Image (spheres, rainbow over the protein chains, first blue to last red):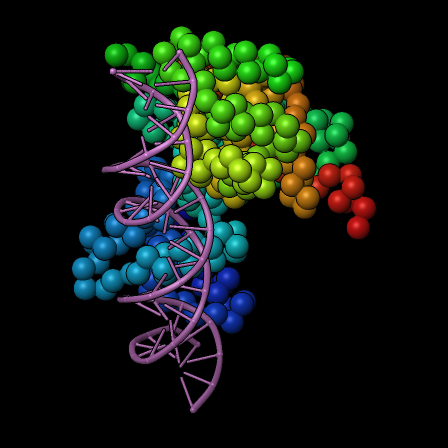
Length: 146
Length: 146
DNA sequence: ATCGATGCAAAAGTTTTGCATATAC
DNA sequence: GTATATGCAAAACTTTTGCATCGAT
């Protein structure tokens, strides 16, 4: 998804809710989009503080917008073992995460067999499945060389 | 696993490391063991404060011992979407979690097909798998009745 | 002009740390 | 007796909230 497409989506969501399209919202969304890794609130704030010396974004605004962006479905969050929420753009392709415990690298993947089994499990326990998270923790090829 | 077996394990671990077997350690472990649900630090502290009016356990001791107990492998922690670590006794039977988003009920399950697929995925991305978490979020039968 | 959004600072919530004292060994 | 563990309080860290002001519409 290009930045333009993403910002257009934001514009639509904002208009639908009769809210306002602000520079800060765009900047926060842009930062998540540009980030190679899944990024957290503090990292977003830091990046914006460094790159936008004259046009500050407060940490409260970052938190408020992360909640907003997640509510609207534009971004997704994951909670890894260390208990810090990290954010990513919602590309509407469901996926799970493979996390390197050494370097923090995150690889996204999807496996249809697992998805099917999850439905089976939910049915067995009579749960109506809403969503799920799966995080595989390991050591990536690079880190495993040492 | 009975309380006695669990406390015996704690005794062994403590002896091996030349540490001390304290009343507080036992109380914290006992509280996790007795808890029907996966319990967090604050809940453990609250329970001990109520039941042990004359023999207090400080919140710092709770946190220090949770780290210790997790390190030794006697307990496991899970981080759910809300970003609060919850603890359970390690029964050495790996399992995953089905969580009701209404009432918070947690059901444990294991599925060998998923375990196998996870190994396949790790191999594909050249990760050496250390562990994993899978949380299915949904609405349980009781809550779904409304 | 209006009403939501922002920045700041204060507050709230969670976890960690320093230190004097207590306690297991 | 010695070294670890504890309780307390303070500090550190993360997230939320109140409020005056700004800015998008």
